[in-house]
Structures are given as structure tokens and as C-alpha cells.
Length: 307
Image (cartoon, rainbow, N blue to C red):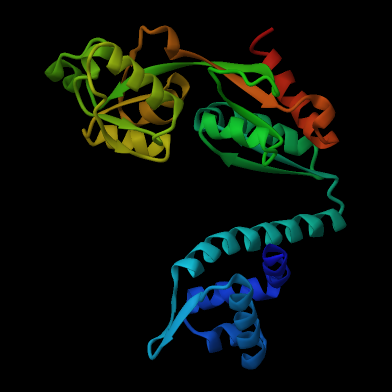
């Protein structure tokens, strides 16, 4: 019963007012910004606190300071408000003639190496389909397909999930990248095992590349020396260019980003360095029609490389 009472109080206007108080630190400014009477804003906040059974702010002479309960609600309110704004944008686009919406998630390797040209061709052929592309680690892509926060995903996956459908999309090859030939000669680096003695620049902690490197280091009795984690391949290559460590990236990414920066690449003679990227989705009967159109387009592109 209490949960139902809280849900009734979490209407959109109340969340907007609450969120604005968090940002402004002032009830009066929140009321003004949301064009509502101060007394009405105050009542909404009081009713919300009563429904939750906890104070959301501490009022003092310096303004309104958020409580731990308020911090928790602020985290969720931001996501709710963002989702509602996204929904309103999508619905407006349907009024303008949009015929569908597809949520595609992919790992960074697929986004840099393969998707730009293929998605550009798709959009040109299907201008009335809206496409949302988000970057995630391969692990998160799989999770998001399973929980249906994404329609299609492209990722590396070592453990196929029985409720998902996998199609081979591309194959890529990982290489080591270093600052220069002088860097290689100075450190006497010829193999991956040599490189693992030195600092590495990595991507997000849960990236598939990091996981493989960690497993390799442990197999030879070493600890993976990740000096720094960065969010993109261009940032990784810049750090390598500055001499901060060694990077592991797909060969095509090296050709696109690393080579123009003057970096040197070395092959990795490990079976896992040749990777399979998959197009992942729920079974076709659970996909909306426009997701099926994009899926078929990507599979057609993939077939040109894997006949």
C-alpha cells in the first residue's frame, strides 16, 4: 500500500520540481523555473516526503541540502525524466512521418571499424526510420539485449546465451601499438609476453580486450599492469603516442587512428587475437518490423565479407 502511495506521488511535475531543487538548491528558484506557484511547489514536495516517509532535503539558511534519501531519488528521477523527454521526441517524430525506431548498441571496435558506412547507407535508404546508436562493452550489450533496452547489438561474445540469436558479423585482429620503433628497441619488445612486463593503456575495465589480457598475464604468472583506463581508441592512441604505455587495439583501428599518429604495430600471436563479432538479437518474432529491416541490412553487409 505504501509503495502504491509513493507511485501516485511520483508524477512528472513533482519529479521536475524535485530535480530542479536538487540542481538549484532552492525551492523558490525551482518553482520559478517550472512556472508554478511557490506554495504549490512546497505542497508537492511535502506530499512527496510524506509518501516516502523520509526527508528529502535539510532546510537551513544557506538553502536546501539533499539527504541520502534525496540522493537516491535524484538518481532515479534523472533517468525517469530523461526517458520521458526521449519518448516525447520520438512521438513528435512519428507525427512528422517517422515510420519506426531502432535501438542499436555496439562495442567500440564495431562502431569505429564497420558501422559508420553501413549505417549511413541504411539511413539514406530508410530516411523515415530513426536509429539510436549507443556504445557499450560487449558484456553490457548482451545484458541490454536480454532485458530489451536494446533491439540489436554487435559485440564479441565468448559465452552464447540460449535466449538470443547470433549471426557472425565481422572478424577483426588485435595488434599491439607502441610509440615508435625506438620504443620497441629500447624495451626489447617482440611478443605479447614481452609487452606484459610494461605499463599498458586500456579501455573500460570490463572491455573484452582487458579481460583477455588479464587472463594471459595470469597464465604466465604476471599481474596486468594497466597504467590508465580511457574511454576511446583515439584517447588510447594519444596516450601511447605520448609514451605512457602500450596499447592493444583492432588492426583496422590502428590503420584509421594509430598509424596517422606515427604509432608502430606488432602482431599478437594468440588465438584470441583473431576475434569474431556477432550481430545479436532476440529471435525475429520478438523484433519490431524496422529492427528486422536494419538486421537484414547489416547481415547483407556482413555476407559481403563472410560469403
